[in-house]
Length: 175
Image (cartoon, rainbow, N blue to C red; front, side, top):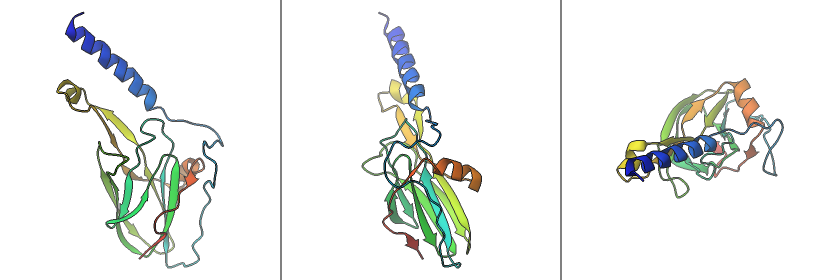
């Protein structure tokens, strides 16, 4: 068999498998995990803000988990279909996704949040797997996963959060 034809067949096969891996599960009211699911939080101190940080279910890159840092402090390893909430003092926060032992290839991201008293903020971290044909052809790993941090409006976030499980962060309150 022609070597070029063999590479094309392999690449088409990989592409078909990758497209299947990036499908998103939509199950009304379903949750693959047992345990506490999403509930809104009312922080009693009106001088605080509430930050919800969540990762909706995604089959592709389900096992990769970015480390979430806020102002250079590790908060949590955000697993697939999980969420956390934090109370924040008013001020500026830099939220980052960083590599760790569960995620080593891809693109790290950051988001700057200016928190105000009494406000709620929703940030989504979604796995985005990429395939780079050029890297495959030169013999490097062709796959990478990015975890961009994106601000989401309340209604969209609440719809997605309903299918996530709570994950205890290392800290719940940030000054």
